[in-house]
Length: 326
Length: 250
Image (cartoon, rainbow over all chains, first blue to last red; front, side):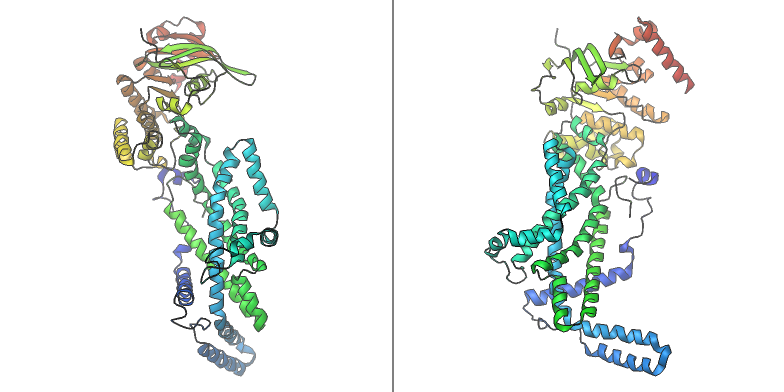
């Protein structure tokens, strides 16, 4: 809960903490990133390579190579003091070397995003009842919810992926479903990963939501009951709308984690960003360039997620309630 | 002679070893305004919360309009539609505007559509003089305004009985007046009210009866003139004079 100012005067007078949305350069970079992604995906998945061939980059390599060699020559002529120019030449070399792989990585980014979004969204649907059970349930329900949470938080996500992929018939079942593996709909391993992330993330999300529910004053539910709402309706209409707002900052954290943890899906052959990077690198031996590039793409995804959450937080903000922590 | 609107019959309540209410009995008729006074810890708030079953009693019976409401098979949500409550610390729904606070029960308990509920919500806000604050959130309201919204929220359910649990004790002194004024208006309109409060001005002018509760028992029960001017029990007199001194010091 906020400072005295925020509880008495509300949104208008509260000095809003600076966020990512206030930085034009960040917005521009994220804008360029997403434009590239969307054009790439549309071309590859929907238009069947109508704009440009599937594995051909939008950006020509030539100018970057030329810049790199010109700068390299310049650096050589400058001798020992030419090192900053040498670095700049290295940067262009990096770009020239990376560009050919961008199309394949964009496909990996698609899988990473889909994996994360589905995992967190489906996990959220489980996390809400789970956290309510933890806070308001009877002793049996509480224990059940606690058991679930501890099981999925207490064992490695990778182990969960392996168990679901190798030890259950999930893969076989999903493979038989129509449309799986066609076009931009990923193959069965992907869906197994979605299920694993859903189950695992639900446990973590429920912890964030649980502590947020605990910070809703008890009098809120009492007042809801006093006007004749049942306990369930009181939780639904009074406690959750407040608790979920309190949960946003912590929950955003889980989203950021999941973007990066989704790389574990590569271990069960999901062709997401990390798997693509690794596969190309082992073919081309350009490990440094590719993993730096992958890191930058993950960073862009994380910043995009933070931007979205900042926007959401602002949109649902209510004077005197919740999240001034930014 | 018709049934009393509310009847407490030998009500007992304890928390573990601690006896909070020890055989409380009284009746009030429709239109009555009864004010409960007594030292802190005497069981006033507990008694109030027993009436809408936010607290469950251990012994005795409570009747509302002739129906025993402390039976195990009483639908508490049904009961609470008929008994409104105003809280000491307001407990306004923090995520809803003043109007939202007043209409939540109408929509989710009474099942009204949004437009009808809002129409009624505006009426109740007008009743407490807060029509212009309909779109304000609780954090944007003063304490007195919050409590008036709390009253409008309880009124909106059209209850047979309104319970007030120390409605002015969390307020700055200069904000007490506006809340008391609203309560006085309600009393004058004939709304049945059971009020836990030490607002003596209100008790003198609006109460039908004063109930003096001490140590979980009703020590004295009578019209304000009698109780204030000619208290029968020694404890009542002592308590009143202490209250008097406290007020003079303010």
